[in-house]
Length: 167
Image (cartoon, rainbow, N blue to C red):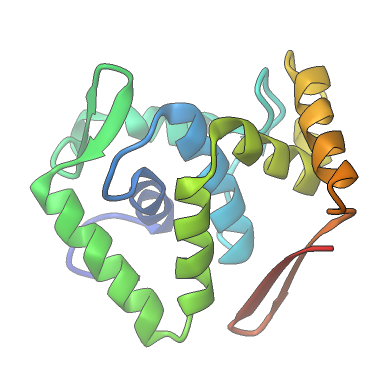
């Protein structure tokens, strides 16, 4: 995406997932999972207690080599000044590549509650829930969304176009 820094695509996803307001690790994990699928970037996601989890994402969040871009304050990761600069360059890069749809999805993911974000990842990627300790609670959230008329989620990517629909 951006050649100015010695980072790879996964680092960029993490920075986008942290966002300009910061996020906790569970939310970062879920946003990275969704963005990696939308942007076709490989991650090592595996089933875990709260759904999809990437050991590599966890390691990078706690890596000293990434301290120039983000830091952990209490239980929340926040971008440094350099990280914010990179975050905005990444958004500009997505716009330049006609991927405004990804930016809209990212903004929506940042605004979602943890429960709804986890429910979305459980619904979209049920293979990541086999070890979940909160599956029953999340399935209740999914059922309540279905009862409100949202029968199905659909994610589709064709070329530069990404579509997420709640049918």
